[in-house]
Image 1 (cartoon, rainbow, N blue to C red):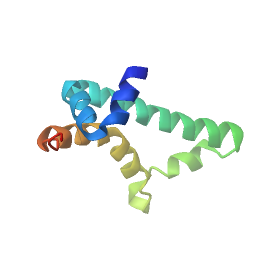
Image 2 (cartoon, rainbow, N blue to C red):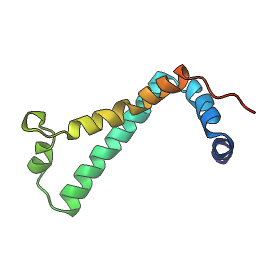
Image 3 (cartoon, rainbow, N blue to C red):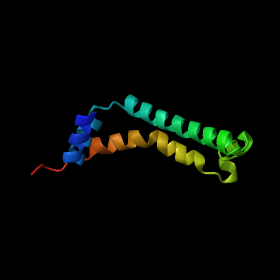
Length: 97
């Protein structure tokens, strides 16, 4: 992990493109699922257990028909790694000097 961080620090765009090329879409989807699950777990854990907000009130934030857009945030978190993976494969890395 330390070597990966050092490599990213030297030439971040080139190194990220190399890392993203090796990431399969299923791996990227897994990253999105993990981040989404952690986000929902934090939301319900913190706001319900710590702040005392009722679960019904938390679930009301998922109602798109009432103008709640939180589901779009979660969809972005879920699909973001796949989109970034597709972009890094489509855009060639800048030439090294």
